[in-house]
Length: 388
Length: 235
Image (cartoon, rainbow over all chains, first blue to last red; front, side, top):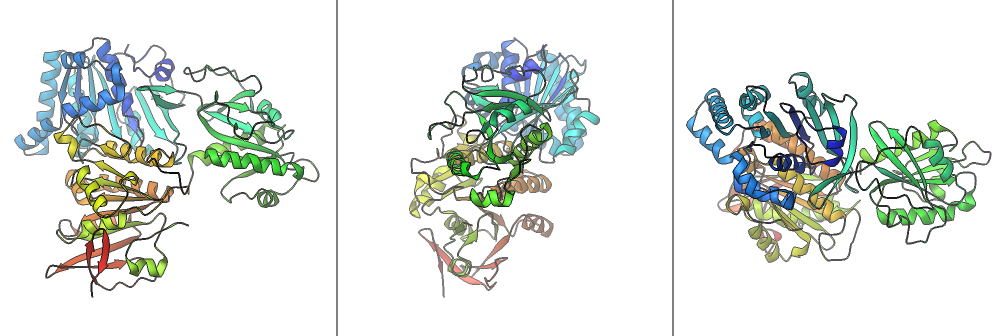
């Protein structure tokens, strides 16, 4: 088995990736996901495996420099020099100069890869696909990479930049038998930058699972997304958290999830599409400078619960809005007690709270599960499909 | 909505500047002052930021231009796709980032996102945080070089992502393309991603431009030069 060095991913894959697998790391444009490939390389080198890295866009020195910057001390450059063979941008230029037709270039690529794999008894090939795909098309590019694993014992890791969207990704599971497909993505919203990976396809597990991650101390730290539930006193925050919570308590994917929940907070959880969300309800009394307790970081969004039938609490709600806006965290309004007489209409609430048009207001009853789930739907959609 | 002053009176006087989210193509032959025009339009004014993706010259040269033009270098970032090929050990800073070559679109996209993120988080410069979203001018110098290394279709998709991202962040984009090196199909495909086009020509060593696509701005040719980062319209 081969591990990736990404704790949440290795945990999802249970024992790791079986030898001989084909693995795809698909990066959406602009998403800082190169560390998945580098981390997998570092782990393989640490395991004493012999590797071939194919990187037609860059040179060996530039690659080593980038890899060191990404992985720090996790990457052993001494072992890299002993265990890793490279085919780089200079080799690509040589191939292009020596072979005139695409067909003969493809043959030259294959010959080089086969020679290295045989001579060095390569266990794992790490390949950056984009330029090979552009030079030869996807089928031939993958044929070239596959030629080094003729006995199917070698494992293949491929990274590519997906500019074409989900249809292109589908090809890696339908047309080409990749065993593991990981899509590394981010929310579309510029701030906060919410980066996550989705296990799109796995030969071991079929259920898609998405996990947000941070890069800290040269390591990928996955975590369950956190949503803060806040609002004036008696607006229904605790009810909201209790109603939303369902299913078994989630297992933490990293040390972030294992941080204790502050005593004065409500804690709940729910499954939203392929994410496991953690919900934290904070008390109505909070000092003005402490909307988010220092122990609770990495909030992806906030639900501000207000009592739609009690406009006297609106000045306090305005204070919360001011605090949230300073933090620049996306938020939506859950206008609770919508089933009571005297509740205000969303348009009135928007006016009274001086809310911008783009902030969604969801009229709900916090005792009704579908209402509460609709709020979470609206918040996550607001975060991930943000448009200015 | 924030308006970006261009330093070109014909635009600024009529519309107050470019609307946030505008992407402009500068279509120009070589040696036509187009690069200086693009940089003059990219120069950050007070409270603004500039990011230049340079595929033609080193970050130090880009920064020199902005310094000479009177821009505060603390608000200018460069993604340099040149230097790393000769100096692989060069290290990124907040404002200067390096990718190994213009072919490496993954790297360019990541550095662009990182820089935008740093600006949004207020960590780009030591100055006081100003407007939110922060006004960002982004310049690609040049699309021509990127087209030398990557297929048109791939680059179109890549630029589509960049221009869309810039719209969302409420920035403006200024993109340089050599008008003499590419066929009509290439030019028209790239134009599809833009809101307006500034066409540049050179006649007897004098450069002129005309503007297409900005309401109220006439499309007449105007002679110009660029002095110390300022666009000067000649009689």
